Image 1 (cartoon, one colour):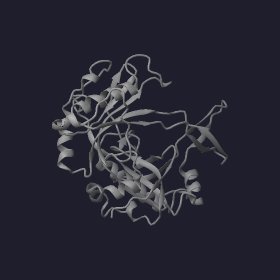
Image 2 (cartoon, rainbow, N blue to C red):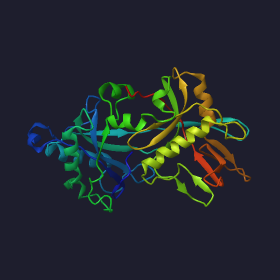
Image 3 (cartoon, helix red, strand yellow):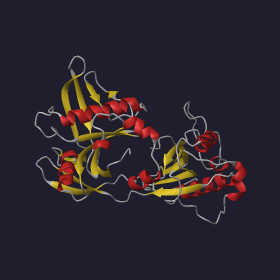
Image 4 (cartoon, rainbow, N blue to C red):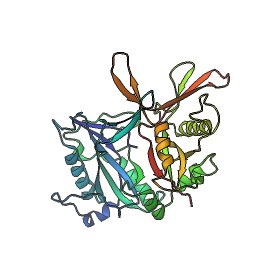
Length: 345
Protein backbone atom coordinates (compact mmCIF):
# COMPACT_ATOMS: atom_id res chain seq x y z
CA UNK A 1 0.00 0.00 0.00
CA UNK A 2 3.07 2.15 -0.12
CA UNK A 3 3.70 3.56 -3.53
CA UNK A 4 6.03 6.58 -3.41
CA UNK A 5 9.81 6.17 -3.27
CA UNK A 6 13.01 7.75 -1.94
CA UNK A 7 16.38 6.35 -2.99
CA UNK A 8 19.52 5.97 -0.93
CA UNK A 9 22.23 4.76 -3.31
CA UNK A 10 20.95 1.22 -2.87
CA UNK A 11 17.81 1.72 -0.81
CA UNK A 12 14.35 2.73 -1.94
CA UNK A 13 12.57 4.63 0.80
CA UNK A 14 8.79 5.04 0.62
CA UNK A 15 7.55 7.74 2.94
CA UNK A 16 4.50 7.79 5.15
CA UNK A 17 4.24 9.17 8.73
CA UNK A 18 2.58 9.80 12.21
CA UNK A 19 2.31 12.34 15.04
CA UNK A 20 2.10 13.81 18.51
CA UNK A 21 2.47 17.32 19.93
CA UNK A 22 6.04 18.54 20.37
CA UNK A 23 5.02 19.69 23.83
CA UNK A 24 5.36 16.06 24.87
CA UNK A 25 8.81 15.55 23.30
CA UNK A 26 10.51 15.14 26.65
CA UNK A 27 8.18 12.26 27.54
CA UNK A 28 9.07 10.17 24.47
CA UNK A 29 12.16 8.03 24.96
CA UNK A 30 14.80 8.34 22.24
CA UNK A 31 17.80 6.20 23.12
CA UNK A 32 20.17 5.46 20.16
CA UNK A 33 21.21 2.20 21.85
CA UNK A 34 17.64 0.86 21.88
CA UNK A 35 15.49 -0.58 19.12
CA UNK A 36 11.89 0.61 19.00
CA UNK A 37 10.05 -2.25 17.33
CA UNK A 38 6.35 -2.18 16.56
CA UNK A 39 4.09 -4.27 18.82
CA UNK A 40 0.40 -5.18 18.81
CA UNK A 41 -0.44 -2.77 21.62
CA UNK A 42 0.36 0.25 19.42
CA UNK A 43 -2.36 1.93 17.40
CA UNK A 44 -4.72 0.55 16.21
CA UNK A 45 -4.49 3.56 13.87
CA UNK A 46 -1.05 4.91 13.07
CA UNK A 47 0.68 7.10 10.52
CA UNK A 48 2.71 5.11 8.03
CA UNK A 49 5.87 7.16 7.84
CA UNK A 50 8.33 5.41 5.56
CA UNK A 51 9.13 2.12 3.87
CA UNK A 52 12.66 1.19 2.92
CA UNK A 53 13.44 -1.31 0.15
CA UNK A 54 16.86 -2.36 -1.11
CA UNK A 55 17.40 -1.77 -4.82
CA UNK A 56 19.93 -4.59 -5.09
CA UNK A 57 18.35 -7.86 -6.35
CA UNK A 58 20.41 -9.81 -3.82
CA UNK A 59 19.18 -7.69 -0.94
CA UNK A 60 22.60 -6.17 -0.24
CA UNK A 61 23.32 -2.51 0.49
CA UNK A 62 26.51 -1.57 -1.37
CA UNK A 63 26.52 2.14 -0.54
CA UNK A 64 24.58 4.56 1.59
CA UNK A 65 22.56 3.51 4.62
CA UNK A 66 21.07 0.08 5.12
CA UNK A 67 17.31 -0.26 5.46
CA UNK A 68 17.61 -0.76 9.23
CA UNK A 69 19.98 2.18 9.68
CA UNK A 70 17.73 4.57 7.77
CA UNK A 71 14.65 3.41 9.66
CA UNK A 72 16.35 3.59 13.07
CA UNK A 73 17.61 7.13 12.46
CA UNK A 74 14.19 8.29 11.32
CA UNK A 75 12.53 6.74 14.40
CA UNK A 76 14.98 8.53 16.71
CA UNK A 77 14.49 11.88 14.97
CA UNK A 78 10.71 11.58 15.19
CA UNK A 79 10.89 10.62 18.86
CA UNK A 80 13.12 13.64 19.56
CA UNK A 81 10.34 15.77 18.05
CA UNK A 82 7.76 14.20 20.36
CA UNK A 83 6.25 11.51 18.14
CA UNK A 84 6.25 7.86 19.26
CA UNK A 85 7.69 6.02 16.25
CA UNK A 86 8.41 2.35 15.65
CA UNK A 87 10.09 0.00 13.17
CA UNK A 88 8.28 -2.89 11.51
CA UNK A 89 10.10 -5.41 9.29
CA UNK A 90 8.20 -7.46 6.73
CA UNK A 91 10.07 -10.38 5.18
CA UNK A 92 7.88 -12.62 2.95
CA UNK A 93 10.39 -15.49 3.11
CA UNK A 94 10.88 -18.14 0.44
CA UNK A 95 7.25 -18.64 -0.47
CA UNK A 96 6.28 -21.65 -2.58
CA UNK A 97 3.44 -21.69 -5.07
CA UNK A 98 1.60 -24.58 -6.70
CA UNK A 99 1.22 -24.26 -10.47
CA UNK A 100 -0.54 -26.42 -13.05
CA UNK A 101 0.66 -27.19 -16.57
CA UNK A 102 -1.52 -27.47 -19.68
CA UNK A 103 -2.41 -31.10 -19.08
CA UNK A 104 -3.33 -30.62 -15.44
CA UNK A 105 -0.12 -31.74 -13.72
CA UNK A 106 0.71 -29.86 -10.52
CA UNK A 107 4.17 -28.65 -9.60
CA UNK A 108 5.43 -26.74 -6.56
CA UNK A 109 7.89 -23.96 -7.35
CA UNK A 110 9.69 -21.36 -5.27
CA UNK A 111 8.63 -17.76 -5.78
CA UNK A 112 11.96 -15.97 -6.19
CA UNK A 113 10.44 -12.49 -6.10
CA UNK A 114 10.96 -11.55 -2.46
CA UNK A 115 10.65 -7.93 -1.39
CA UNK A 116 11.88 -7.34 2.16
CA UNK A 117 10.71 -4.04 3.54
CA UNK A 118 11.51 -2.04 6.67
CA UNK A 119 8.73 0.34 7.67
CA UNK A 120 8.50 3.25 10.06
CA UNK A 121 5.11 3.92 11.65
CA UNK A 122 4.23 6.49 14.27
CA UNK A 123 1.50 7.70 16.57
CA UNK A 124 -1.23 5.78 18.42
CA UNK A 125 -4.85 6.63 17.61
CA UNK A 126 -8.14 4.89 18.38
CA UNK A 127 -10.01 6.47 15.49
CA UNK A 128 -8.91 7.57 12.03
CA UNK A 129 -11.06 10.69 12.40
CA UNK A 130 -9.42 11.63 15.71
CA UNK A 131 -8.47 15.33 15.62
CA UNK A 132 -4.98 14.65 16.96
CA UNK A 133 -4.46 12.01 14.27
CA UNK A 134 -5.54 14.37 11.49
CA UNK A 135 -3.55 17.33 12.84
CA UNK A 136 -0.47 15.15 13.35
CA UNK A 137 -0.71 13.85 9.80
CA UNK A 138 -0.72 17.41 8.43
CA UNK A 139 2.28 18.24 10.61
CA UNK A 140 4.23 15.17 9.48
CA UNK A 141 3.69 15.88 5.80
CA UNK A 142 5.64 19.13 6.17
CA UNK A 143 8.68 17.65 7.93
CA UNK A 144 11.99 17.32 6.12
CA UNK A 145 13.99 14.97 8.43
CA UNK A 146 17.71 15.64 8.70
CA UNK A 147 18.45 11.91 8.62
CA UNK A 148 17.06 11.70 5.09
CA UNK A 149 19.29 14.51 3.79
CA UNK A 150 22.49 12.49 4.03
CA UNK A 151 22.93 9.14 2.28
CA UNK A 152 19.50 9.39 0.71
CA UNK A 153 18.52 10.75 -2.68
CA UNK A 154 15.00 12.11 -2.97
CA UNK A 155 13.45 13.16 -6.27
CA UNK A 156 10.52 15.53 -5.74
CA UNK A 157 7.41 15.17 -7.88
CA UNK A 158 4.41 17.41 -8.41
CA UNK A 159 2.27 15.23 -6.14
CA UNK A 160 5.05 14.73 -3.59
CA UNK A 161 7.22 17.84 -3.22
CA UNK A 162 8.77 16.88 0.15
CA UNK A 163 9.99 13.52 1.53
CA UNK A 164 7.11 13.00 3.95
CA UNK A 165 4.30 14.62 1.97
CA UNK A 166 3.01 11.15 1.06
CA UNK A 167 2.22 10.31 4.70
CA UNK A 168 -1.14 8.66 5.42
CA UNK A 169 -3.07 6.99 8.22
CA UNK A 170 -3.20 3.21 8.28
CA UNK A 171 -3.79 0.36 10.74
CA UNK A 172 -1.16 -1.48 12.76
CA UNK A 173 -0.01 -4.26 10.38
CA UNK A 174 0.52 -6.67 13.29
CA UNK A 175 -3.20 -6.72 14.10
CA UNK A 176 -5.27 -9.51 12.58
CA UNK A 177 -8.71 -8.63 11.12
CA UNK A 178 -10.32 -10.02 14.29
CA UNK A 179 -8.10 -7.97 16.59
CA UNK A 180 -8.62 -4.87 14.51
CA UNK A 181 -12.41 -5.25 14.44
CA UNK A 182 -12.41 -5.51 18.25
CA UNK A 183 -10.31 -2.36 18.57
CA UNK A 184 -11.90 -0.11 15.97
CA UNK A 185 -14.44 0.19 13.18
CA UNK A 186 -13.47 2.42 10.28
CA UNK A 187 -16.55 4.49 9.36
CA UNK A 188 -15.25 4.89 5.82
CA UNK A 189 -15.26 1.11 5.31
CA UNK A 190 -18.90 1.03 6.35
CA UNK A 191 -19.68 3.77 3.83
CA UNK A 192 -17.67 2.17 1.01
CA UNK A 193 -19.21 -1.29 1.41
CA UNK A 194 -22.75 -0.51 2.54
CA UNK A 195 -25.31 -1.52 -0.06
CA UNK A 196 -22.65 -2.96 -2.39
CA UNK A 197 -23.72 -5.78 -4.70
CA UNK A 198 -22.05 -9.05 -3.63
CA UNK A 199 -20.49 -7.37 -0.59
CA UNK A 200 -18.00 -9.52 1.28
CA UNK A 201 -19.68 -8.40 4.50
CA UNK A 202 -22.63 -10.61 3.47
CA UNK A 203 -20.43 -13.70 3.22
CA UNK A 204 -21.68 -16.21 5.83
CA UNK A 205 -18.38 -18.09 6.06
CA UNK A 206 -15.39 -17.55 8.33
CA UNK A 207 -12.85 -17.37 5.47
CA UNK A 208 -12.73 -16.49 1.79
CA UNK A 209 -10.05 -16.55 -0.95
CA UNK A 210 -8.65 -13.35 -2.52
CA UNK A 211 -8.27 -13.90 -6.28
CA UNK A 212 -7.98 -10.36 -7.72
CA UNK A 213 -6.99 -6.86 -6.61
CA UNK A 214 -7.81 -3.54 -8.25
CA UNK A 215 -5.85 -0.48 -7.15
CA UNK A 216 -6.26 1.95 -10.05
CA UNK A 217 -7.89 2.86 -13.31
CA UNK A 218 -8.75 0.35 -15.96
CA UNK A 219 -6.15 0.52 -18.72
CA UNK A 220 -7.07 0.37 -22.40
CA UNK A 221 -4.05 -1.14 -24.13
CA UNK A 222 -5.74 -1.75 -27.48
CA UNK A 223 -8.83 -0.33 -29.16
CA UNK A 224 -10.66 -3.56 -28.42
CA UNK A 225 -8.81 -4.88 -25.38
CA UNK A 226 -9.13 -3.62 -21.84
CA UNK A 227 -6.97 -5.17 -19.10
CA UNK A 228 -8.94 -4.38 -16.00
CA UNK A 229 -6.44 -4.82 -13.20
CA UNK A 230 -3.01 -4.49 -14.77
CA UNK A 231 -2.36 -0.78 -14.26
CA UNK A 232 -2.42 1.48 -11.21
CA UNK A 233 -3.50 5.06 -11.87
CA UNK A 234 -4.84 5.79 -8.42
CA UNK A 235 -8.55 6.02 -9.28
CA UNK A 236 -10.29 4.03 -6.54
CA UNK A 237 -13.72 4.64 -8.06
CA UNK A 238 -12.66 2.87 -11.24
CA UNK A 239 -11.01 0.14 -9.18
CA UNK A 240 -14.27 -0.48 -7.35
CA UNK A 241 -16.22 -0.57 -10.59
CA UNK A 242 -13.79 -3.09 -12.12
CA UNK A 243 -13.96 -5.34 -9.04
CA UNK A 244 -17.75 -5.33 -9.11
CA UNK A 245 -17.71 -6.13 -12.83
CA UNK A 246 -15.47 -9.16 -12.31
CA UNK A 247 -17.64 -10.47 -9.45
CA UNK A 248 -20.72 -10.11 -11.66
CA UNK A 249 -19.04 -12.05 -14.47
CA UNK A 250 -17.88 -14.84 -12.16
CA UNK A 251 -21.39 -15.23 -10.76
CA UNK A 252 -22.93 -15.47 -14.24
CA UNK A 253 -22.54 -17.74 -17.26
CA UNK A 254 -20.13 -15.73 -19.40
CA UNK A 255 -17.35 -18.32 -19.68
CA UNK A 256 -17.84 -20.60 -22.68
CA UNK A 257 -16.02 -23.57 -21.18
CA UNK A 258 -17.66 -23.12 -17.76
CA UNK A 259 -14.49 -22.84 -15.67
CA UNK A 260 -15.38 -19.41 -14.28
CA UNK A 261 -19.17 -19.71 -14.29
CA UNK A 262 -21.58 -19.59 -11.34
CA UNK A 263 -18.82 -18.93 -8.78
CA UNK A 264 -19.72 -17.42 -5.42
CA UNK A 265 -17.74 -14.17 -5.75
CA UNK A 266 -17.63 -11.17 -3.41
CA UNK A 267 -16.33 -7.59 -3.46
CA UNK A 268 -14.60 -5.63 -0.68
CA UNK A 269 -13.44 -1.99 -0.79
CA UNK A 270 -10.93 -0.36 1.52
CA UNK A 271 -8.94 2.88 1.51
CA UNK A 272 -6.34 1.67 -0.98
CA UNK A 273 -7.88 -0.96 -3.24
CA UNK A 274 -10.87 -3.13 -4.10
CA UNK A 275 -10.60 -6.90 -3.99
CA UNK A 276 -12.58 -9.82 -5.39
CA UNK A 277 -12.80 -13.02 -3.34
CA UNK A 278 -14.40 -16.40 -4.00
CA UNK A 279 -15.89 -18.97 -1.69
CA UNK A 280 -17.37 -19.11 1.77
CA UNK A 281 -15.37 -21.43 4.04
CA UNK A 282 -16.05 -22.51 7.61
CA UNK A 283 -12.38 -23.26 8.31
CA UNK A 284 -8.90 -23.06 6.81
CA UNK A 285 -9.11 -26.80 6.11
CA UNK A 286 -12.16 -26.65 3.85
CA UNK A 287 -11.32 -28.87 0.79
CA UNK A 288 -13.01 -26.36 -1.53
CA UNK A 289 -10.14 -23.93 -0.88
CA UNK A 290 -7.63 -26.12 -2.72
CA UNK A 291 -9.98 -26.43 -5.70
CA UNK A 292 -10.36 -22.66 -5.99
CA UNK A 293 -6.59 -22.15 -5.60
CA UNK A 294 -6.03 -24.52 -8.50
CA UNK A 295 -8.70 -22.84 -10.63
CA UNK A 296 -7.43 -19.30 -10.11
CA UNK A 297 -3.73 -20.05 -9.56
CA UNK A 298 -0.82 -19.73 -12.03
CA UNK A 299 -0.18 -22.08 -14.97
CA UNK A 300 3.03 -23.57 -16.36
CA UNK A 301 3.75 -22.55 -19.95
CA UNK A 302 6.01 -24.81 -22.05
CA UNK A 303 7.62 -23.40 -25.18
CA UNK A 304 8.65 -25.30 -28.35
CA UNK A 305 12.33 -25.08 -27.40
CA UNK A 306 11.66 -26.88 -24.11
CA UNK A 307 11.80 -23.83 -21.85
CA UNK A 308 8.99 -23.32 -19.36
CA UNK A 309 7.80 -20.71 -16.91
CA UNK A 310 4.58 -19.83 -15.18
CA UNK A 311 2.19 -16.91 -15.40
CA UNK A 312 -0.72 -15.80 -13.22
CA UNK A 313 -4.09 -17.25 -14.06
CA UNK A 314 -6.25 -15.05 -16.27
CA UNK A 315 -9.67 -15.00 -17.87
CA UNK A 316 -11.01 -13.18 -20.91
CA UNK A 317 -14.44 -12.79 -22.48
CA UNK A 318 -15.82 -10.76 -25.36
CA UNK A 319 -19.04 -8.86 -25.95
CA UNK A 320 -18.40 -5.93 -23.58
CA UNK A 321 -18.80 -2.20 -24.06
CA UNK A 322 -21.61 -0.13 -25.54
CA UNK A 323 -21.06 -1.67 -28.95
CA UNK A 324 -20.40 -5.14 -27.56
CA UNK A 325 -17.03 -5.14 -29.32
CA UNK A 326 -14.67 -5.03 -26.34
CA UNK A 327 -12.76 -7.94 -24.82
CA UNK A 328 -12.15 -7.97 -21.05
CA UNK A 329 -9.10 -9.78 -19.68
CA UNK A 330 -8.61 -10.17 -15.93
CA UNK A 331 -5.32 -11.27 -14.36
CA UNK A 332 -5.73 -13.14 -11.08
CA UNK A 333 -3.43 -13.10 -8.05
CA UNK A 334 -0.17 -15.00 -8.48
CA UNK A 335 -0.86 -16.74 -5.19
CA UNK A 336 -4.53 -16.49 -4.08
CA UNK A 337 -4.51 -15.83 -0.34
CA UNK A 338 -7.01 -16.88 2.32
CA UNK A 339 -8.45 -14.07 4.41
CA UNK A 340 -10.92 -13.86 7.28
CA UNK A 341 -14.30 -12.42 6.31
CA UNK A 342 -14.55 -8.84 7.72
CA UNK A 343 -17.52 -7.51 9.61
CA UNK A 344 -19.17 -4.10 9.41
CA UNK A 345 -21.00 -4.47 12.74
